[in-house]
Image 1 (cartoon, rainbow, N blue to C red):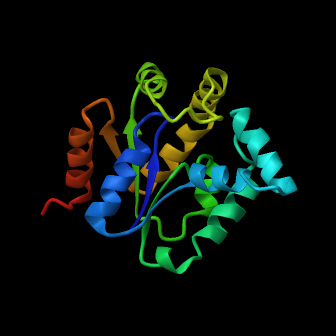
Image 2 (cartoon, rainbow, N blue to C red):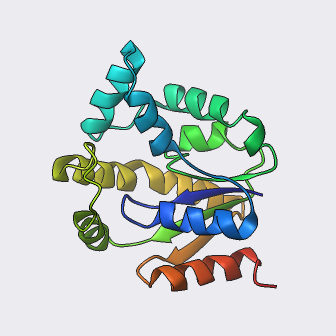
Image 3 (cartoon, rainbow, N blue to C red):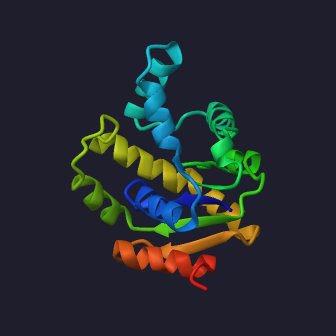
Length: 180
């Protein structure tokens, strides 16, 4: 199964992605992780990615589609995957409509997301308050169209992300029909 996780930063996408990966036996992948790993390099693209991420700006559709699509060609993703952070725009969703079966929207308020992020201990360089607010604003501006895209295809599942981790996971499992 190919599943897309959607939500603002701090919604719990990576937590739920890892739990789903264990339950379903398919790999979990984060586009943000791919970009952060690439940003550690010494190439021109690496430096550009680092600056872009630290500013809280989205990587262009063309570059994101190219990077993620190429990454998903690896053999471990051929039997399915769970991905978060992609697609973020309607252009990305349309270009990525090759077999995505479900899109799960983990719905949390901006206030809850900011609260959760402020409690993190890993102190990522791209998690300044300014960058986080910018990403949340961009999410509301562009990702709403992605939700509509998956809704029209009857692939969207919405869950209340402000429940406990276990309750969110249980709701996802039930709505995917994995509890049977």
